[in-house]
Amino acid sequence: MALKLDSKIPAGALADKWSNHKAAIKVVSPANKRKLDIIIVGTGLGGASAAASLGEMGYNVKVFCIQDSPRRAHSIAAQGGINAAKNYQNDNDSVYRLFYDTIKGGDYRAREANVYRLAEVSNLIIDQCVAQGVPFAREYGGLLANRSFGGAQVSRTF
Ligand SMILES: Cc1cc2nc3c(=O)[nH]c(=O)nc-3n(C[C@H](O)[C@H](O)[C@H](O)COP(=O)(O)OP(=O)(O)OC[C@H]3O[C@@H](n4cnc5c(N)ncnc54)[C@H](O)[C@@H]3O)c2cc1C
Image 1: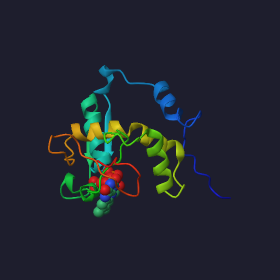
Image 2: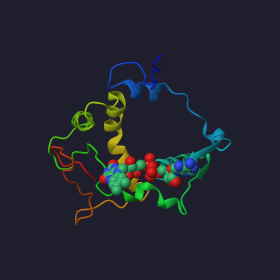
Image 3: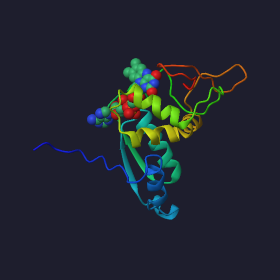
Image 4: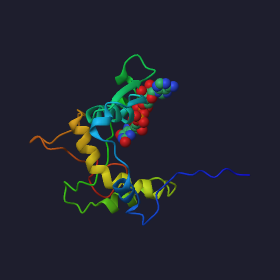
């Protein structure tokens, strides 16, 4: 019998699935966060940003990696950029356009609800990266620069 993967995507309309889930999720009292140990395996952008954010929230975080230095994760190789629908270039970008381009760029094989959530929080991801020190390219005036990248019709790559 073929195994069916349960990806546990919440119910509801596509654009609301993860927002509704987040609104209904149980939260941990600030007084209790410091009583909880969280173990994170990996210090790339995924693990390191999760560790920094959870540590800032007050949890006891322990991070592990296999390289000589935490910064040697595969993530340091990335240099093309990260897409976000901030529409800084005023070229009619939107969460829906980023969602659509990403689904299309993934040959229609990605999980739509998760890609929609990625597009929806893309702007927050850039803000978080900037706050945590990711050295994005900037315009001469200091603002974050964008370019068109990967076949997109708009300039949304940071
Ligand atoms: C050359 C290159 C260019 C790229 N350019 C882009 C780009 O322009 N834009 C983009 O969006 N993406 C790009 N990517 C992809 C992107 O870099 C990765 O998808 C992303 O960095 C993965 O981040 P991560 O935190 O999930 O994993 P990683 O950065 O790979 O980190 C994995 C971590 O897990 C640790 N680990 C693994 N196994 C164990 C274990 N058994 N025990 C303990 N620790 C373990 C590793 O030591 C490491 O710290 C590029 C990738 C490459 C290689």
